[in-house]
Image (cartoon, rainbow, N blue to C red; front, top):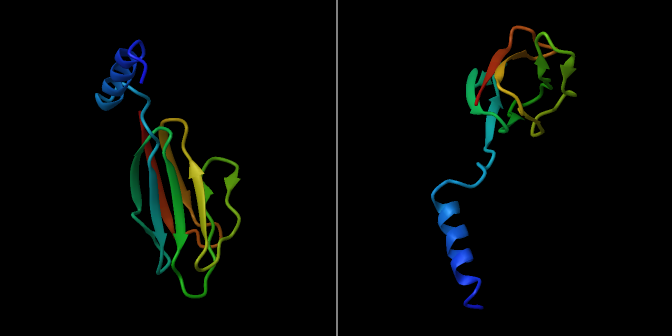
Length: 109
């Protein structure tokens, strides 16, 4: 390594290890099983992604954001659907074909 660049590399490494770099987005899962979302309430950070995984045996589901004009396509057993949450807020949802199935994603800063 060139001696002129060593201090800059060390500084960049220290900055990254100290948590000064950009935070990485996390991925979370919601399991769809027995006509329920688990967990029913999920708290995440802004920028994280949630993936709903259908673990049913024979039933398709969707994720319909309540109060928003957004619904996933139906996903069948063994399939999944993901959505990123770039802004903070409370995102209540239900299953499109099964309105008794409710959940909420709470996105914090």
